[in-house]
Image (cartoon, rainbow over all chains, first blue to last red; front, side, top):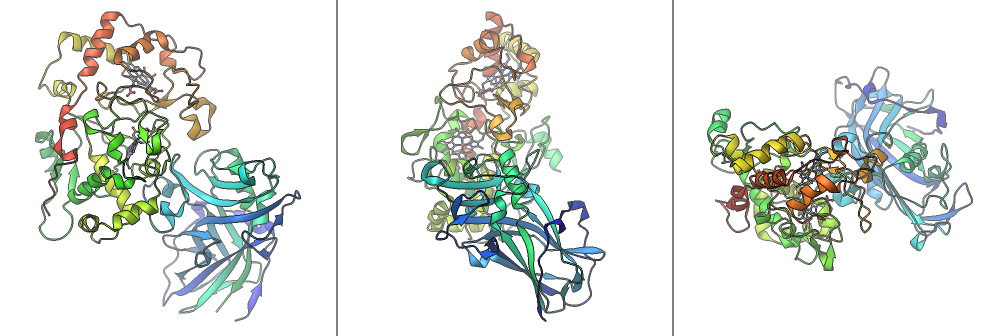
Length: 254
Length: 346
């Protein structure tokens, strides 16, 4: 099949509620496979860690040393139901190419949208020792205030006044007023669908634009906020921004 | 069957649930002392308690290799003879001549505790060890390095296999085993408990103290666990050295300023010095705090304490007699929890 390039305007990003999840209908026949790939970019260009100096909307310059985030509760929706990935937790880590894609089996069907949560759902934050992507070895778990760091961005900027001009965002908080968890639904545009067929692998490529961390809805200058490592109002504002970083770049049907 | 045993086996906290021969761990039943509430959540529901898991957890608890230089096992700060608190230390010693910034609490009846640490920042017993293992002023290690050390030891490979079926050593298994050990420590055989069960009686002084306690202290230090696990401000001045605002650090809510978890008073005669920073060295000093030391101008002071507590010298003495009845030497001497003795039969 041909590759189709899609660019999804921001207004198609709608927050959906977990109650929208339904059990997929049992399908007949062999499942197909769905591959999800994340491409981290800055304003559409593939992210280059360490070396490249970027400029944010406030003309502040920065470089990136670490960029990782959790994606969980992945699902695809068809006309009257959804298909959920089982045990769906993924740590997307720019420094580990293998972490940028994952594959799971999905029921053959025609799907119209992609759903996921940015971060680790609250239940897994209170359920004790986990393993795999949720292993505390991944350095994404707070020990003094139990809970996962949902997204991490670290680097340097001359506009940061903290030691070594550090920029350090460890964004978390899974309950209460400053809960940073976000559920997203990305619709494929009219006329485009994801087709899962028996024994075949189709793919969704998601672009994550790091430039979105600084603006919309909240203007966040590095000079004002170089560091955020605790749950709270600032973390929530940053999460409000980064929840807009995802768009569907491509759907590849096979 | 279990409930029948529960009536009889008051102190034997573990009943082997079916001694099945052959491979696989020997599962244990966690016993709730008669008359006690059920824990809000069952910490062993997803971490099935077994003899092998418990023994592995005990070995880990006493093993210095969980710390950077080998000198700071869990048991270094949590000593059995001191009810698993740091005996006679306001702050405990950590790696490289450091001190902890809070007083180490006793470890017992953790299966009932909904949130750990003085500020409740730790939400599950299984993830608690991550905090001391990685804190630079405690064990100063990292998880990866601990696991590498354990994997080199064939005894551990054998113990992990016995507890979990395969010799794989990972963080989840290590943490679950530690929780099986610490979560199994139950203190329920003090003189107070014996009196409740009709096996002993209070002296007149202890009884006066108990009655005074029920009237003035038990709304926070609630029987039978001697805490309601809530976070409260009992009127201590904030320490200018530590600037520790307690619960507020976790919730970010001003209303939680200077609130700390109500500590259990079981074994309180052993767990001196007292309060989150160990600032009070004796029970007498604690009672003096409640009768004359409470800072009544703090906006978050608990409403129960705004008028301080009127306590005569006689009542003070009786209260101390009573608090001494909460010491459980069965637990502090139980060979099951101590380093040397092991009942491991494999």
